[in-house]
Amino acid sequence: MKKYSILLLLFICTLQARSQDKPVKIVFDVTSQDEKAHQSTMRHVKMMSQAYPDSEFEVVVYGGAIAMVLADDSSVADDITQMKDNENVSFKVCEGTMKRRQIDESILLPGVGTVPDGILEIVTKQGEGWGYIKEAHN
Image (cartoon, rainbow, N blue to C red; front, top):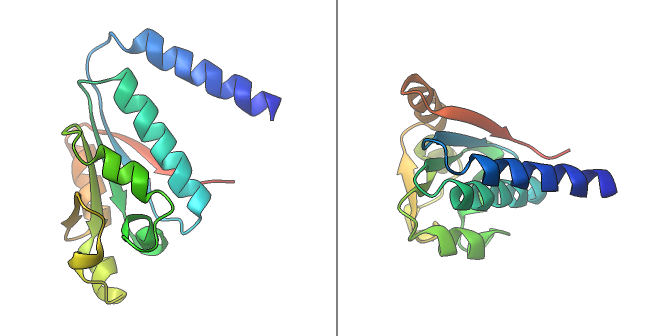
């Protein structure tokens, strides 16, 4: 636990030290159904969006992670809802995943948008120069 706390502190200090640098664009890839992965994603997005207020962040959710953006199932619903007014942070869910799981857009959390294909969205962002983070939890 101490090692994790020290690493997190170093990460935050690094972000704060670099917060004066040019803006960044980062896409987060979330496919895990593990709620801990959803929670760590939100920690990362919150910390980075605070450290880089002029930067852009997009969380792309597909596959097993779909519960992360569902109003009745999300363990991070409050965090996502609080961030919906931050125009530099967006949450997108794969329409293909929604179709396969018979999920209607009406049950998504407020502020969550859709994209036709989650993988294509990520590849497109990378082609536009966005950084890439694969979210997982061990």
